[in-house]
Structures are given as C-alpha cells and as structure tokens.
Length: 207
Ligand SMILES: Nc1nc2c(ncn2[C@@H]2O[C@H](COP(=O)(O)OP(=O)(O)O)[C@@H](OP(=O)(O)OP(=O)(O)O)[C@H]2O)c(=O)[nH]1
Image (tube, rainbow, N blue to C red):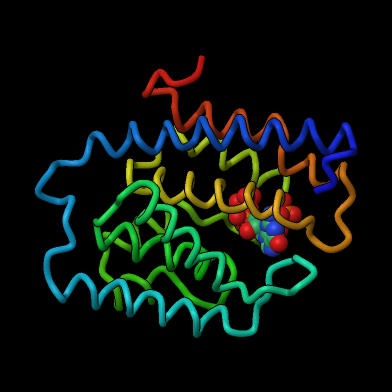
C-alpha cells in the first residue's frame, strides 16, 4: 500500500487501529482459558494439528491468494494458526486445528460432516461458526457475519479475529491484484467496526 497516498495512509491507520483492538480482544479472550487446557500435552494433540495442516494443504492445493505473487492459499490458514500460537499463545489443539481448517468448508468441497468425522465435533463446531455460506450474495454474508458474531463461542471468536488480523496485514503487505484503493477500503469499512463491536460486546473493549 503506497504510504504517500493520503487515502491509503488513512486506510493503513484504520488497519493498525483495528489490529491493536483485535490483539487486545484476543488477550481478553485468552484470559478466560482455564490453565489446565493451556498446554498441548500429548502427541495426540500434535498429531491432530499436523493432520489438520496436511488436510488443509491438500484441500487448498490448487488455490492461490489474490496477491501479485499468487501465494499458495494454504499460507493464509497456516498464518492464522501461527498468529494464535505465537502471538496469542493458544496451545489448545482443537482451536489450532480449527484455525488450519477454517476455510475448508467455505472455499473447498469439504463438508462439516467430513471435518467432524476426521477431526471431531469440537473442531467442526468452530469451523461451522466461522464459515460463510458462499452461495449467498456478499452483502448478505457480511450482514450475517455481524449478526452471528456475538453468538460465536470464545474459540470461534479467536479464529475469526486471527483471520481478520491476517487479512488486514496482507492488505498492508500487498494490494490484491486488480483492487483499487476503494476496493481495499471496502475490506477496511464500517462493517469491520460492526463485526468487532459484535465480537467484543460482552468484553467491554469498545463502546
Ligand atoms: N487481504 C487479502 N485477502 C485475500 C487475499 N487473497 C484472498 N483473500 C481473501 O479475500 C477475502 C476478502 O476479499 P473480499 O472480496 O472482501 O471477500 P470475498 O472474496 O469473500 O468476496 C478474504 O476472505 P474471507 O476471510 O472469506 O472474507 P471475510 O470473511 O473477511 O469477509 C481473504 O481471505 C489477499 O491477497 N489479500
């Protein structure tokens, strides 16, 4: 994003503002985690996370991000899981697996039943809560995200926030091919305020 362009600069400022709010939100959600679950203790959990990474890599194998380098799509889901693991210090294998799988139902032929059968109902439930129905018009999907956000459970909120953070950072890193500044601004719109407001309503982080 060209920082010499005042419009782009204000978008960047909004991104940074939202990123800061979301990181505070993640830390607030994390503080609710019981200590005993805050540790990936056994090889079964490591195996679950690696299986999810491998499954996501296979399902997204032919997909690319919208940047000029056509980055493999799987980099996005790995990055979302990495934000949770490294920045939010999430060690709950179910949440990390769901982060890795969060776009499989929305963007590939994978069904929630596939996810439940392979990764269990807890992971499938998180994926369900963060998946949009791509058959709906974009405006409807965005509206439903706002309406559903307050009713997501904590684990789904963590994945959604990390997803939004990753996409904001990606917008800052490289404007997607063919996107005008107006198009970029659509992703950095009052809708984002509404989604964050809905997510944080119970946490008194924004008013
Ligand atoms: N910033 C950025 N985004 C990219 C890139 N490549 C793919 N995307 C995806 O594009 C979506 C944002 O583009 P939009 O045009 O607003 O959404 P749409 O594809 O669903 O219509 C995000 O998906 P989404 O998570 O399903 O959208 P949403 O849930 O945030 O609405 C994001 O993951 C890229 O290079 N940069």
